[in-house]
Length: 343
Image 1 (cartoon, rainbow, N blue to C red):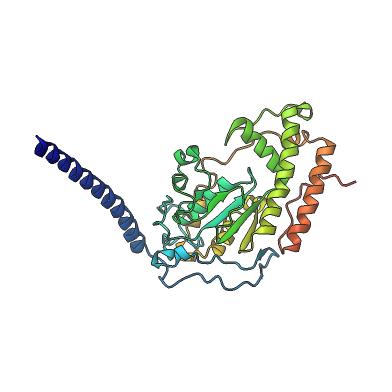
Image 2 (cartoon, helix red, strand yellow):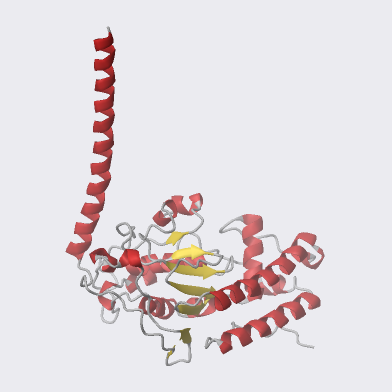
């Protein structure tokens, strides 16, 4: 009887080992297949280590600045051959292209620990999710997040299912400081429009729009939201400028709206994505994405919700942030002059 029990335990033990082994090889083979496909598609040379040593300040032709350097450096986990893996495609230069040509615009995670940790940082409702969509369209590489939003994952952002520090995503969405990152793209949006967008999100979700009535100035929830978000905006900017000493690229949301291909190209330059690995045509084919809110409400009605005191306080914060940014070599925030009050 004891021999029978021992035999049964042995069979169960062997079966467990067999199951674990099969699961391991299944996931290993998936990564190997992805790696092979990337190699077949074409990739950077293995010795392209994206030097981070140059800490000079660069200035673009239109006067935009990036602090320290226009490049992303290595992390220790990204010094292997796979550190430079990117999807190759032949649509980096859109001039003379057939806009009807078939092109793969999907995005997938890179192999584990193959990419440096680059923050895509913003105060909430500054266009972070939309810019992630544009970067995925432009590169074919998934973007990640510190928050793992299940709704965004269901909507196609595969990086939402991964750990933020997996090294498998192009950038990492965050609304807080992320000192572990080797570089950061910071999205900056005018606080008036950001507050409107965040109020829409808090009351109606990612793509909904709030009910903007004529009596909004007397709405207590609105008044509290404006006060909190005004302080949050300047705190976020001070946090990054004063505590993060690695390469930073500053991108204004309004510049992305006015010239999405041009501003995304700046980001790709900062990330050291070669022109041959860029799918800029995908941006023009799918500009909006699934989570870019379409705000059809009359701007005049929304702007009227700001009381004179709110406008003075927000204008004061804009002026403070402008000084901070210009001292660090960046452009000031986008201005909505009809809302600003200085006296």
